[in-house]
Length: 434
Image (cartoon, rainbow, N blue to C red; front, side, top):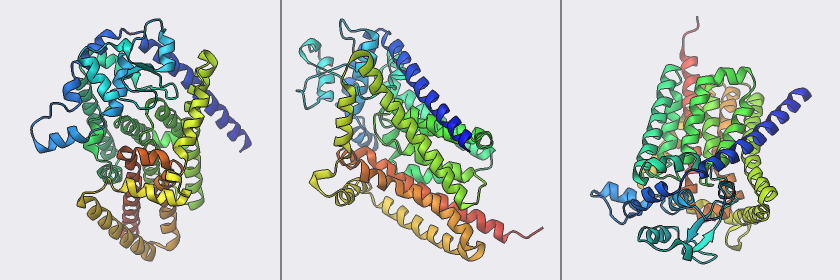
């Protein structure tokens, strides 16, 4: 056991350090690409992408009005900047972009509009965003070098749909139809259309779908080789590298649900152990990879990123509005739940809860209390994880509820998993013995 733990620690260290070094190298190469084609492709599409020219139809107008535009604007600005006198490596570390706002307020949308109208960028504030990796630039800048901003978004939508179809196809092939059923329930609570059309909101979803494909393809191998801890660590690394702190918990919770749906382990102790190992692996990958950006930035360019990042962590995790932490947590939960204002969400949530409770009671009566508890506990812990996250990171979840609410989809998906697991037990119980 001791040797296995030491081996895991070694693997984790190598994976995090290696990913950080490769990550900064790839970003440096990306910033060596010319910025002028990107600038032309982005600025020519500003009117339509900034919802100044709304398409016809109520649905499309709703999508354009409610999609995440502010952070998308920052992403494309980071891709088009080329600050004179700054090397590709400095761009990779500092993540420069121009802005009309003062030192406190950022005006990403207005800045893009002004640049599109020919404003002099040299007269704007030069901002940096060094505490994030901005790994999305690995694919975003090359795409914008060739395609317009709008076309790049369409490519992203096509990729997400292709990945989703691949997950469903693989689930059918592997006879694990429970996976797409549970995934569909979770997706309903993520406002998938708004998620698919946004550069920012699609990052965690793409990571999640890729993780599911790898899981479903190599589940037995990962389990037999005891490599699931490393797998979740890599998912955490990818999330820290590509994401903008949107709804990262989804990249942990959804693969965890799928892990238990595909696992044949029925022992509660082992299921809890696997839950802990996989969660810790993801956490080390996520936190470790993020910390490596701060360390690389400070060691090589003396950016002060560690200090800036620590203060931001303190700020993002502080209790909201001076409230006691748990009081503030309930308040922020309410803010996030307000995103589900349409009646369909309440109807589905109530129906899901009623069906799952009935199935749990029936399973306990027919299959036994112990197997039912073994099913329940891991999924209930996953279902609670969004509310733990909101309690810890409540300031961020209050400020950005328009996209952090998506982690609550894990609660719905976990409940759906309980339901399908109970159905499995009942079917086996009702099957005639051979």
